[in-house]
Amino acid sequence: MPHCNRVTPYGEIVVTPERGTLMGNRGVLHAADGAHRRDWQLRRWIACLLEFKGRHRELRRPGHYTELFFLDEATALAAGHRPCAECRREDYRRWQAAWPGADTAAGAMDRVLHADRLDGRVKRVHEARLGDLPDGVLIDRDGPFLLAAGAVRPWSAAGYGAPEPARPGERVTVLTPAATVAAIRAGYGPGLHPTAT
Image 1: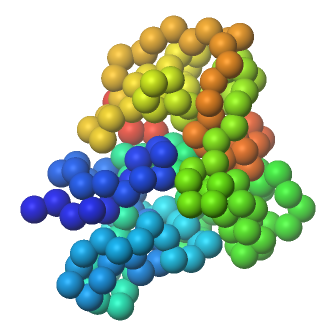
Image 2: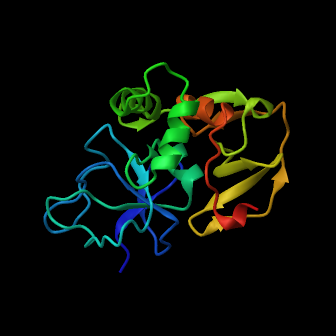
């Protein structure tokens, strides 16, 4: 039976059987009985490899962080996560090199991301012209869409749909946090699900 541990580009944690290509966490989000009780605990929202050094985790272990799963890195970034500094060390270094602020310490970046991803208890979004956004960003167009190779692709828990034309002058609601959009624009290319190609 699927757990409530799959993250959408809106940052919501939902129940779905698809696993995704990355794992991550936001702290301990489940009760001792495994029931989902909150959507975040810490400012440090990270995205990790599914496998690292042969480690094995029991899902929803009492008192331990809640394992979350993402379709791909573009989804994790849109939800407000960043690369893990341990299991994704090279990606983390690329992230730091592209980060728009002067302070690239994990805690400093996490503070900026936390302010960018939440408006109180709801997802913070911003508006932009589609033509001003880099590939790898997710937007809302009556549902989440990935911008990739000059087109937009509808997002689902199983993957991306067929490309649709992107209108560069179109004003869109951007799901990916502003600082993350800046990092992608500066050269951080997020990993995409195979259905995006």
